[in-house]
Image (tube, rainbow, N blue to C red; front, side, top):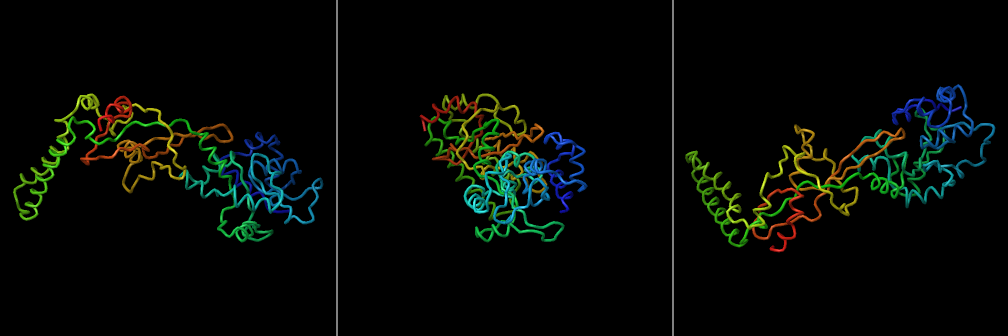
Length: 365
């Protein structure tokens, strides 16, 4: 009899479930399940398949064959590899499994962890129960080879790295993600300031005149670094005046856009979130807030960056086997980013204001 208890208990720990919870979910008495896991009792075919389906494992590798389920003559040719959703009978032969691993079940658990920026335990809990998957036993227990190493066989046949044991359906994963989207919203829009002025060329001329003054003063300070501090302050003042010069040339629409308070990353909740269309960007390209965090920065560093640069927020909600939900946010760049034509200067406005005045502003571009 194989030493199964520690392996199965580890799977339960990864799923954050107790024996009592599992017994209730599977319709097995807690006492029987405890005996199975302690190795004092061998499960019948029905219970072993229930547990195998729930854990996403290969039942004949993890459970001994009982009297009502005789050993097959050639198990290596008729190995049952578990996809998911209690539909393990759909893949009965190794050739079928290889075809699936090469065409449909191409996403490993490690891949999913990287895409969702989540630990394996989180993926085991919120993703794997909902997607079709194939489990490849490595034939080892307690560090000893006791059966066929199916990961190695698959790697040789497919000619690719198969270090992970569990491989999921890419279509199932994509559909799960899309079905888990709660909202797609946007708070801010980063626009060229030239959209707000009456005469863009006149604005560009004034803006460039400041550039020439700053370059001249900067050259002087490089030649005479011991100049009075007032000279350096003058350089900073010129830059500030340049950034604000567009306000002296605002069009009527520009004044309307800037009326009121500008969005502030310090108080993002004060800016309304507006529903927008989901961009056609692959899930693998979505950005998690923690990606923007560097050493010494706070948790909301990423959120502030996305707020100040007009990114689109995608909020998802995932549910585990117990019905508990957890939310996770991702961001993607604005697919309708606006770029300057005359002056490389931008201003942040709310998405709500942008949608109100966009047609009028763009008609004058």
